[in-house]
Every structure is written in C-alpha cells, then in structure tokens.
Amino acid sequence: MYLQRIYLNNEGRIARLPYFGYSLALTVPYMVVTYLLASILGVMGSIVALILYAAIVYPYYCLMAKRLQDFNQPGKWAVAVMGVGLLAAVLQFVEALQGIGMAISAVQALVGLAILLIPGTNGNNDYGAQPQRAVLV
Image 1 (cartoon, rainbow, N blue to C red):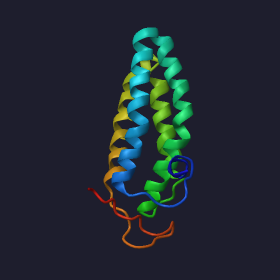
Image 2 (cartoon, helix red, strand yellow):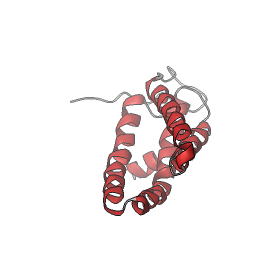
Image 3 (cartoon, helix red, strand yellow):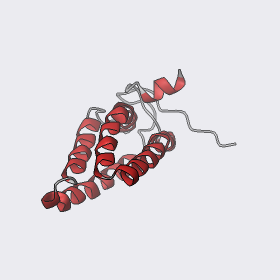
Image 4 (cartoon, rainbow, N blue to C red):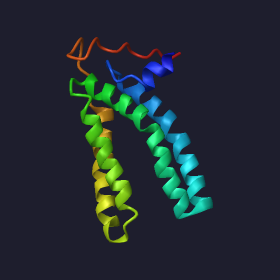
C-alpha cells in the first residue's frame, strides 16, 4: 500500500532523500535489465528496453511530480522533462541525430540534478504539508 502511494500517486510532496532512493529503486533494476538485453540482443534489445521504459514511465512521473511540488512547482512539468528524455532516447537511434540526442540528454541530466538538489519549501505550500524528515538509525 505504501509503495503504491509512492509510485502510483502524484499528489503531495516528497523530500530529496526519499526521492533519490525511490528513483534508484526504479533505475538500477531497469538499467541492469536494459544492459543485459542490449548485450544479448543488440539493437533489438535496445528497442525492447525502450518498450520496457513505458512500464516505468508513470511511476517516474509520480515521483518527479511530487518532487517538483515539494518546491512549489507544478507536477505536470514532469511530463515535459520526461518527454524530452524520450525524445533524446529516440534520437539515439538515428545516426545523423545522435549528437543532438546526446546534447539533449546532457541538458536533461542537469535538469534532473536540479530537481534532486533544490530544497523543498519550508512548511506548507500549494501542494500540501512539508514531508517529514527521514530518520536515520
């Protein structure tokens, strides 16, 4: 139930550290699987990996939307960030446009880093109460 609220609900806010952790929990298995697919199947594996990306787009969207909302920005901007990432991935398949795709990916990485590092709004904001701080034991 808790993971469903994290990955399948775009309402509310999420702090930086949980956002980073939950993002890694999606990214690491996806990267391992896509690496194996590309290694074993070549270009066909890359195409399958792109299709698998469709399965994790919504959980990524929900996480990013909540993170944007934590610093009082509209969560719907996550669609634009992710759309640009998809465009960059597709451009990697067109040899003449690979450089543009790599440049777009670099810019998107910087935007992703900003989303991770910008502190959330202190106290309540338009999207809810400030997330509780994680307790490290």
